[in-house]
Image 1: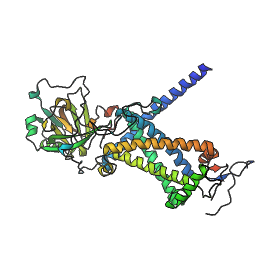
Image 2 (image 1 turned 30 degrees about the horizontal axis):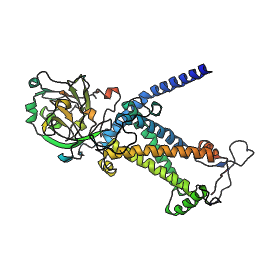
Image 3 (image 1 turned 30 degrees about the vertical axis):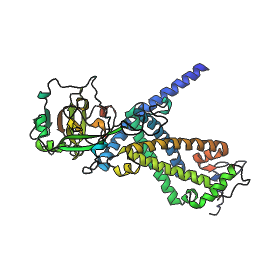
Image 4 (image 1 turned 180 degrees about the vertical axis):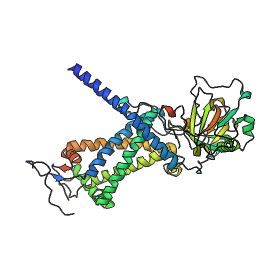
Length: 226
Length: 236
């Protein structure tokens, strides 16, 4: 009797698990549909995220990276941001080049997919200014951001990348960007979840096809807008 | 409303009370899609909760939460990990909202909302009904299709459903729908109310199911087939 019951329980468990596994492709299709709604219906390329006063900054902003230890450059002076892909003039930009470009600062709320939020100030250059400088070609529809954090990367739709609050941040809370938060350069945007903001940047590539991403390829929503 | 002669039961006539048509197919369909999607949303929601089991901005102060930093048992969670749970949660969003809107449209179109919507004039009846349940009153107060306490419950649950959808959107798009998020007191407060809705839904579900089995078991069959054959035929 117990054997049969055990077998039935096993069968029910396996049946349940395989039923759930069978749902995975459907779930990912629905996730793509939700991405589409998020991008085409709910996202506005002009709507700005609310800004906060610097006194409202939250003390604790945790740092995340996928490498076993904090990713660090051997020779920070040699670091350059490569900008290429569907552009007329590919670039190799130093931190000084980026600092000389139009500067944007804002104090905004960071939303993590896990559910926590924290307010911080970010300083950087709008991605749209970089796109202008490299003379982005009309065929560009996406931007791929790559890092030196064990190959972590993200793919962005062009509208989100060109949003006025999407910046390449080299500063945080009135200081240079800390190593724990993606030094020397990271992507930042208050219209995206944290995992979309590539840290430890090495390159940005304008593409015609949709690039994947580290978490996105594992099942997290690709658009990741808030 | 006047009493229409009860239509003939679909099967061979039973020996007891004649069957009466109780629920339109839209009501039955949306009842069960809501049940399944609500269960899925609660279970995937408990998995999502595991990723950050507290409410309040980083660094605190945190809102009162008896489940702070706790995990819910594995059987109550759906999705396996955060990404899986999010995909389930956002997938169930579609049948949950569609079912809710279809149900409300049906109530509006058929006029059935009149027998379900709790209004100020039902307050007195609700008190009388409560007295009856507490044995402070012997005779069952006269009622329509649903007694005032039922009206209160079914109106409340629709409001709760709407609030859970709205707080959900406030968490889903706190920047694009910042006005909605602000309405609930901000991102973390909206998360908090969204979490509270889970427990009110769960409480409703438990009481609802107990009442069905203790007071009126044939009503379960009515919600499946549409035909009711029990102790409480239409009071209209």
